[in-house]
Image (tube, rainbow, N blue to C red):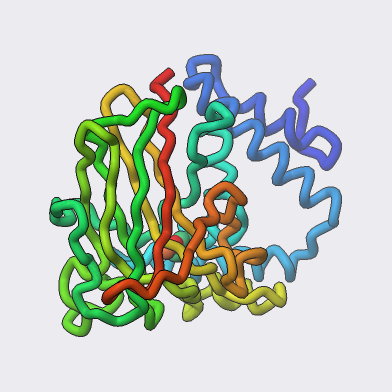
Length: 280
Ligand code: BEZ
Ligand code: FE
């Protein structure tokens, strides 16, 4: 006898429609996602009105997307999903530097600069000397590691958010280590800033009583031959949002030590070593 769809067998009814030749991973993803969605509807007995609002939210999220704006990634970020995908895919040895969220403001092809270069082209912000080493998990320096850095200026905007206002490549650069694995450059002590809130994700945050801020951070991608790619931040520990990052990106080990030095033109110093895990 045919098994028609019912509340009790909804998941089995859905799964049984997929044919045997379906890609096994795709089948697993569709079955599992559907099981959880059906469970949500049964558990909290979603009303038609609530479901309509959910569809409207997703519709507006899609409509907000453009070549410059990815509202779905932002949604994934504020739900903690981006951090979770990152966590399950980057289980590292305990002494390796941890990953965190990439975010939307990385731009490939930043200029490769000599060590010590000042990347704050607009001079807006308190200058900060960043230095440290790139090491392997045995503590040996890694040569030819590429350190790609970017941050906002002290007004809370990335260069790409203010074309024509900030100079191109403001607060960005790539540094390549020598034999000693050392790096250093001058940037600014970054400041906290809100994620974009003029779309449905902003409305959702407001609805949940959440603020949209990310605590101050400098982004870094470190790559080296034979090592896992490190996508991370150095966070400013005394930032008011350090315990409530709207995208859940903070990890204790990524909080940098920003020390006030007031040496020549440099106000702050942050020493931070990056420890890369070997490729498995
Ligand atoms: C960022 O840190 O650049 C960022 C991350 C997630 C969402 C928005 C911005
Ligand atoms: Fe950022």
